[in-house]
Image (cartoon, rainbow, N blue to C red; front, side):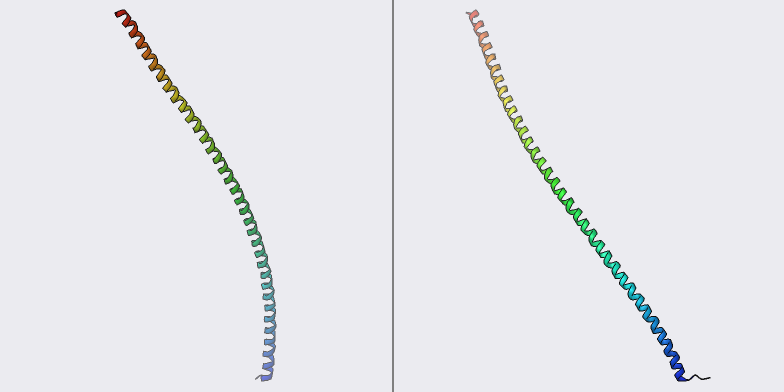
Length: 129
């Protein structure tokens, strides 16, 4: 039995109509999923932006702390340098004083030695005459 071409066309048309309705439903489902994915991506972007902001803030605070600490170290080093210069100045003064005392002691020993030699010579010279 041969089907009437009009009946076949109507049958094919109803299958096509059903397929088109299925495609429309699939498109709506995909559209909803894409919209949901778009919202998730936006939320993720917002969260990443927030986290990077927090990291930037922490880095800025760390940088400020490091600058302050390095400043304190530089200040302490400057004070230490001043103290070292002062102490070396005291050492130089003490060494100069010691040199003066050594020279004075040498002069005293030399003077005392010469005086002793002259005294002995004078005593010996008196006894010889």
